[in-house]
Length: 309
Ligand code: NAD
Ligand code: AKB
Image (cartoon, rainbow, N blue to C red; front, top):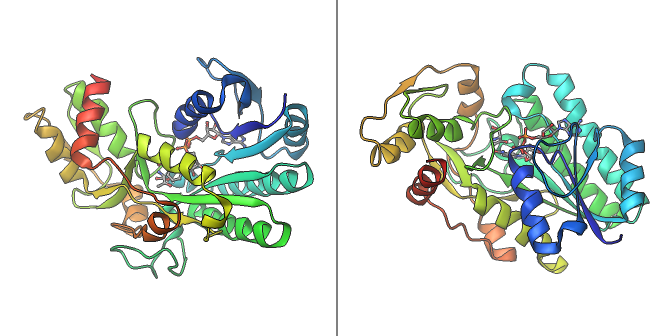
């Protein structure tokens, strides 16, 4: 087998969808999914891999002659704050392992998922520019900001074709989010279709950038397939879908379920969200490789409710 793709952290919210999309695009035999534990229902090649174990990573790269790695394994923002150093360790050790193993073993392209969590108090809250000063206030954000810098370094020093997106909160019906600050925006739809009241851990007016899963996956594949000369930013591209607050998503759900009730009980995640942008400027992604989001809140709500029902 040759020219195969490896996905780390493939059992997560994004990986569950990405692994199937890559299989559909390139063929089942071309995609090697991996994670800490085998998935419950996945039809394809799977390897158990702790991405912080470089020896095991190298074995898989050599065995399958891996040419591209989508490095999704990470501990997300809210979960990361429970043990900041462990979060840094998983997020950074694994990415450095991937970069180093890639350059030494013939991997040609690497995808690194960054996040709006890289922004902190210095960045403008509205339409946050791509090249804002990064002073993140979570261990997760610090690891993503450092990861972007390492991506840039490996590109310039070794010519490794590392590409990266700063995803907003991803919303999809296919999978469950894994410990982030934007998770409420998936959970709220699950409560709505079950006709249950929802308790939101953010304040009703906390606006955050969000993106629908289909857009996030399409952006990832479009970025990875873009001609190399079009990729002008080697740290990470801002990626925008749409932006909304809990009150706005609740209002859009009420157009279908008028009796839907939301209680607002902000917790520690509110402090994280307060430091993140309300909206981000993704003009560099649009200009360089033609990015264009398709889902706004209305279309997102209609699709979430239809699919979850
Ligand atoms: P998730 O938490 O749902 O999944 C992460 C996966 O990584 C899990 O399946 C977990 O088992 C695995 N993992 C954890 N430690 C590991 C290790 N040491 N070795 C191997 N696997 C390990 O995350 P997700 O939402 O699917 O996110 C995927 C990537 O995209 C992450 O890097 C995340 O930071 C980034 N991202 C996600 C979002 C979002 O809203 N989902 C937004 C911005 C960035
Ligand atoms: C999180 O909330 O941690 C993620 C992200 C935006 O990186 N969804």
